[in-house]
Amino acid sequence: MKTIAIRVKINGEAKEWIIAPGDLLLDVLRREGYWGVKRGCETGECGACTVLVNGRPINSCLLFAAQAEGCDLLTIEGVAKDDTLDPIQEIFLEHGAVQCGYCTPGMILCTKALLERNSAPTEDDVRDALAGNYCRCTGLRKPIEAVLAAAEAYRANGGKKTARAVKARAR
Ligand code: FES
Ligand code: FES
Image (cartoon, rainbow, N blue to C red; front, top):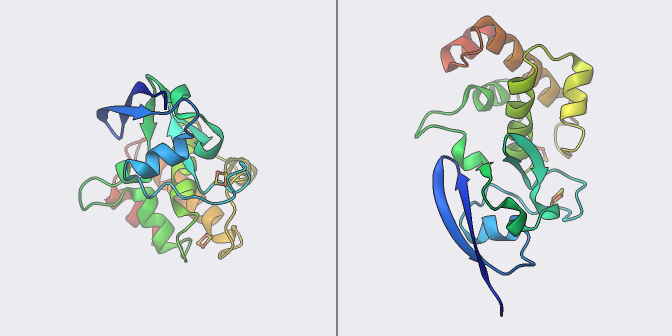
């Protein structure tokens, strides 16, 4: 089988992967141990496989891994720092926006991308940002509330998202 090497930066680390030209990014990521990238519909509908590619949410089931050559990838494994959850993760927990957790990596990554480009989203903006992420457990109401609370905390802290700031605003 023909193989090719691709180089990516993923969660801050430089990696080289040997792949087949037709490999999907979803399959390569899971093969490489990034199991937070979930396999759902595999047709671009559910958002469970979302990763950030150069800061933009992408359904990894729809992207050939070869197309990620030279890109900066972020998966949920790169969001927490050691044992410290990202404030967005904390606020999702505090708002009851995580139940089975299957959709959660994609939601967190979409939220990070949203707040990087728009720290004052309206509820409609949040609905748009999460439109590609299906949650069978929460019905989306709690994730929307969590994203709005995370945005408020983000703004209150001048864009520096600290756990303390998020917790203080969540009470
Ligand atoms: S598995 Fe990729 S969008 Fe559902
Ligand atoms: S928390 Fe279960 S699918 Fe969203």
